[in-house]
Length: 457
Image 1: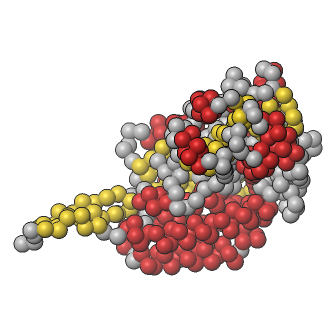
Image 2: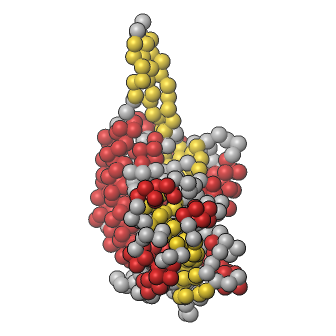
Image 3: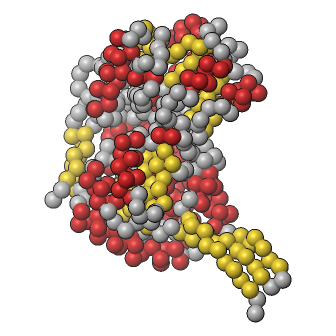
């Protein structure tokens, strides 16, 4: 039997070994899901909503144990695990409220005996290859609206969050979603490849650009729905009229929250030369207050890096930046001992010759670059292959809008950062991917329009 070992990134110890899927079980689950989907789509929406309401209640009931599981397998600090689960509840509520409106048949013309309508029908069988950094958010952004709109779901959680993926699946089954309609696939890349080989009607993936490209190539000739959320190199500009201390405190959290392992973590900061030094001093002071420690401790802010290979990426970015003239102001190295640990790291005097300012870091590391004008900030913010989020700190909304309107990004932040709302679409430009989740558009993406031409006899 194929198995998957789950290790605790905080200490390297084995947590458990899970039975894993193979090509045979993936094919069987896909066939069963496709066969079960029409009956699920025929279930009245009110009943499908009842299942999701029960799922929500299960999350609330088991929240503490779910948070513990997530922290053990990902290294996320326990209070951040609780934050993710509590934040999920609002997203579920949004989907429950808005799905009725999205699925309502639209009459767009009715005159002289002819009626024209648009009906929203399910895609069919949806594949969700999910991420480990926010496994509940990322997974449920797809699973919940897909089920509500009448689809069956083949869900492959990341191998670094497989225990959480099984918990999501367990709660959905307990809530009344049929087992064949919501199937969890456990395993690493080979299971994802087997999933893509099935007859599916949509692929929703969150992860790296390299894997996203492979998925796009694998399904490119099949003309199915493809949504890829591939991360970013998210920039923020701090203008000369901003409060340097307030901006620094906000952006330090935006860069280091969840150990910097967020698609929308602040990864590049550009500060106007007039307040640069004050901002940098306040930023470093703030970062030095972030406590590194046992992820299960209530006062830990910096937990363990989930994936060991990312430590090499962070080391390489620091070495490259320092070799090219960057000034290390904090951190810059791994912590000794077992597990995957990296110190909160701040570098100044950086520029775009450095990998730190060009390639995704996905860790507790930030580069701060001095700029002389809004125009220079815009030019640097756009000097990237990514386009997920971008922000501006200034008391002047018109100035912020003027800057952000020129920046290629799916989400724009004024005096805030590292924020996702269920009411707004989550999308990106360039290497940040294609398609979207969240908002009413993110519900509609799990449907296809059917045009009705109705003439009265």
